[in-house]
Image (cartoon, rainbow, N blue to C red; front, side, top):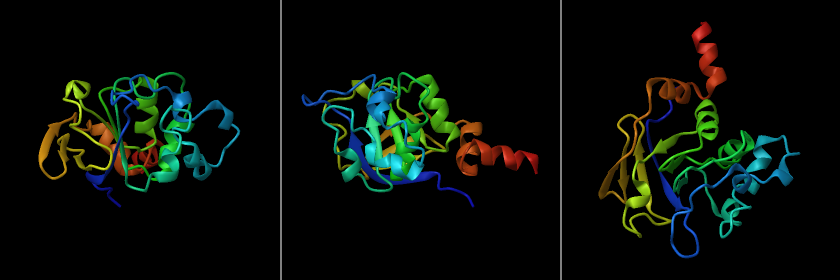
Length: 179
């Protein structure tokens, strides 16, 4: 079964209380270490972002298909897989950021969670993106369509990223290669 290459959802824009991009959101802010004893992926979602000031109730409000947009270096820090799995548990449609922590990016790709890099995202005028906006992402072209009107350019998926995404995750992709 092919997964959609165009994703549509409601946007959550991670800004601070002053309306500025939150950069360097680390894996402890995404999924705090006090929850590391949880091994059931489905139970991880309820704790997503609850250690990020101003976003503690995100998990209770998010809906499957919603997308998250953040500033620079999203997922910095440890190789904590739970920081990817908590979003998968919530059914988050995609993560969009100017950049991602290297290990986080690899974990997300390997888990089949769509992540899209938008260079210069944080240089766009304040208020360009708002929580509640409708966003469509074309994973093939990297095009983002905001509220059906404004078009932005992100980085398209690489071939291997698309192959892993279409397979569902890295393990399923490996199984397909064996056949």
